[in-house]
Image (tube, rainbow, N blue to C red):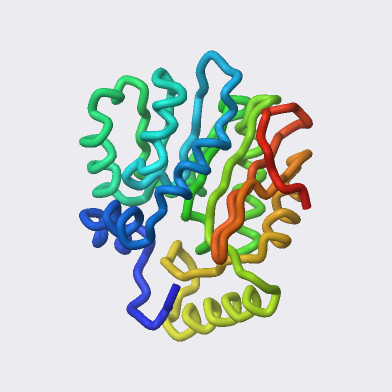
Length: 234
């Protein structure tokens, strides 16, 4: 997560890397196990699901989800038009089940009580506590009463590391004269910070499903329902 490079807007960053994104994530970072674990978080006890995928990119996570629920209805949101074009080509036989929105997920209305599952993978580690909390509240409202939110993302190991990322992001913004907008600047928080934000947003239960060196998968229930997920409670 080196930040010694030209700072790009989120849309520019991913448009410029859309053609190599899948190879980077799967071959270079070897994230097959990560996406397998994400799929394991999807509740299996429903006839079908309506899913909101925030920062869906090229749809790496969708292949496994469609294996579980072949008729799943998915709304995918991403800032990168090129990433969404790749997703369309990969899932051309699923387009009747897909609604794709090329826009910031901060700017659109998700509705209330709409989705069984909201999902975000490797997307939210660029945003401040305030932005994340506002987004988590939107996610909470958009879920059905027995809905769940799944987030897999980079996390800081310690509070000191988290604070260093925050200070560095502020330095970069100041140096670049950035006062507003969504830029590709890394600000991963600790798992504890993440859990606190999710609970502040209203989630009655927030668990760590899996944790690696720099990545954590969180599973959050809108209400206390049994969704048959084996998780680490903290």
